[in-house]
Amino acid sequence: MQTPRVLTVSEITKQIKGLIQQFDSVWIEGEISNFVPHSSGHMYFSLKDEKSVIRAVFFKNANQYLKFKLQDGLKVVVHGNIDLYEKSGQYQIIIDNMEPKGLGMLQLHFEQLKEQLRKEGLFDRERKRVLPVLPRKIGVVTSPTGAVIRDILNVLQRRFSNVHVVLNPVKVQGEGAAEEVAEAINYMSREGSFEVLIVGRGGGSLEDLWAFNEEIVARAIYASTIPVISAVGHEIDYTIADFVADVRAPTPSAAAELVIEKKTDFIEKLRAYEVRLKNDLTNKYQTYKEKLDWIRRSGLAMGLKRTLEIFKERVANAAKSPAFLRPKEKLSQLKQEVDESESKLGRAIKHLLENRRNEVKVLSGKVESLNPLKILDRGYSVTLKLPEKKIVKNALELKKNDEIELKFAKGTTNAIVK
Image (cartoon, rainbow, N blue to C red; front, side):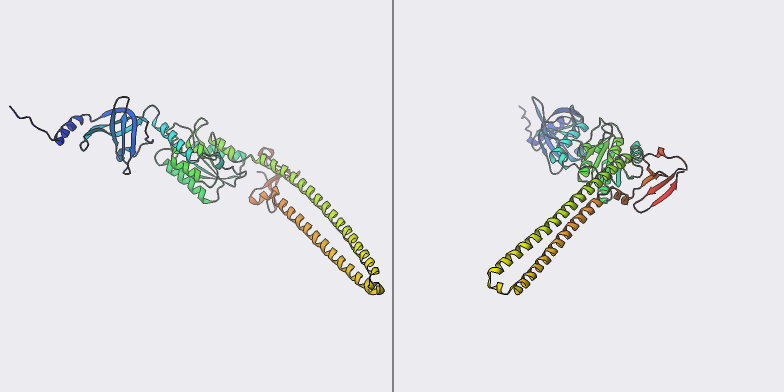
């Protein structure tokens, strides 16, 4: 009888491994469980369905470009090779590609990042800043060749022709686009002269808009020291940048309308403010003047009345005292006291009047600082049509050879329309 060959554990394991390795390219779908990300970057987990479980390994060199986060319960479709881990005798799949089952990979990444940033507070309404009323310098982060920058400039030219706009040109899609957008936002935030930023691009597919769904862009917008308007895609498109930005504009043209008012509307508001401030100043001045007159009159009357009372009291006391025998001496003393009282009263009235004058002076200074015409110091001017000196609100009001007057913060000059 032939003696059967006895195999070692290692020998039989190798034979089984050779059989298993015939499955060198397979697709498997299942639900992730027991997910463990290793510090090396490798990922270890199980794939399961209702009846079975298989171990899975996703090495760093294969998973480093994954666009979504793995977690227990996520259903996926994977591709790889079946292998046997000899040390434990357990078969497993070595994954080289993975896609989410059902929900698209980019959409899943979008939802996962959106939820993460929401929990961190990047979308909180309380932290969103109000846009400046009249920004002196507007930054735009977009492509220099697309229609976006042309649309923004056209709208701003119509609304406020002399506004200062600076473009920071960047890629808006493809590899490296997110990094360029984020760096542009960081630079213009640090630079110090910009008061508001418009960040955006035109419409496109989810893949085209993806740079504005990257975490690096979201965190750059959140860290910006100046308000940011997100203007990405069309009205129906939403990106992570829209949720983090201080204001979301449905289109780039709408962003230009949000960033600054029409110049004509602004001038009308300034004129209304000027009238109201003048009325307020006149009313306050009259009120303080009346109060000052009343205090002055009442203070003199009360001071004189009190002086007479003191005088009568002293005379009465003098009549009852031995000093009555020396009336000239006592009267001289009383006269000196009356003089001192009058001096004190005069100093008190002078001090009171000086305080009131200072209060009126401070109030006048505050009102003057709010004067709308002070805005001319910032480089703006007012155009008047001669000879009636009518404020020009629309270029269509002028024709060739009209004479106009330009009013600046310091001085005026005349010009002829050519």
